[in-house]
Amino acid sequence: MSISIVGLGPGPVGYVTDQTRQAILEADLCYVQTELHPSIAILKQEQIHYISFDEMYQNAQDFDALNESMAEKLVTQGRNQRIVFAVAGEASQGQSAVKTVWDRAQKEKVAIAILPGIGTALAAMAQAGVPSQEGIQTHYDALDILRIDCDK
Figure (cartoon, rainbow, N blue to C red):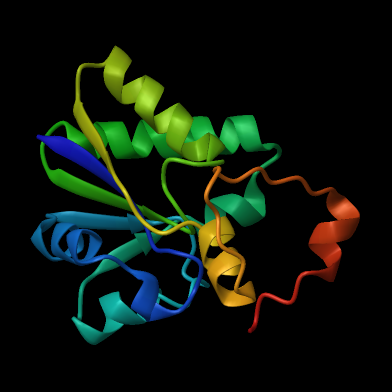
């Protein structure tokens, strides 16, 4: 069957694309990177059963092992069902888990696609009223991340 990786956007439900909503509704099984993302409200509203990787994140020794475990589970399920893996932000940018799942699916010849979405950087620039004509370059370090207020 297949795996579709979708981004839930930067937070508010309104940033989830129609294509992502449709993929979630049509999936046989939906996995979410984290249940803590605000757009999980869509799944709850539609009464869609989903499986969260939150417990794996809490118990992981390192991200490489975590990503491999998630990839194994998703690819195994994706052989026989239409799977959606919903991640925070934009699925094609800055997601090591997505890269690991993609590589594993390709290696094991399971159909996989990444659906475009709205990334955090674009949403932040729009919110700040900063137009982008030449593309986006982001740079941050751990101290910057500590100062980000994600509840707005």
